Image 1 (cartoon, rainbow, N blue to C red):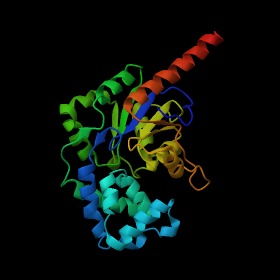
Image 2: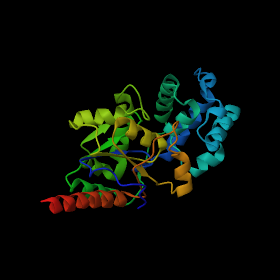
Image 3: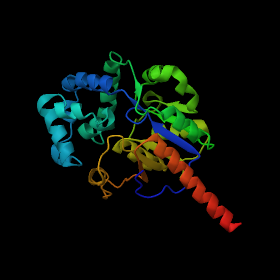
Length: 276
């Protein structure tokens, strides 16, 4: 477990991203993205692409330039399978919420043709999340994808036994704005009747997940499933005035999540006992 700094409090609620944090749906996702990008002109989105000089990193500028020139992702990006469609649309359209809304809609229409098998990223996810629940913590799933697809995939994972893990599931079509806006997280907390504060952890694998957490006012736990090194993590979370959001902790597995929650809870109990 790699920790940048400890979360401020033990979690009463843990919200978790779906794709590339809990499950692998890369094949369907990249097929759908491959269908959307050649339609950017048809969708009136090509002229709304960012200019490379406005990109956050050199790597983002390279991705954007390649899409502008070729109407598709670079084969190396697809091969590495380390970037989500949400991050792709963030790189392409930045703060243009209208453009991203149209891109997500087109993605959903294409994704319906490919949604299929889904596998846990880790073999012991069910056991680890059950152990987190045993600490008295509520769990929720947050996803940018359409709720129809989310429920289909949840039914597929380990023959549907994951349903019992989650107290709420909030999908992209439940809110006006998808991540990195905080709307999904705030809607999940509204449903749970819990305030957006430091007793909520949001676990996700992308920069958009971290931004959404910090914008919602909750703790951001970065799931480093892609095994980025520390230099890359520092690059994508520079902590600058333009890009201020950084994760509160970095984990590499759901076992790390369980361990971190137990550790923070134990520390708080020690402090309480010392004071009494």
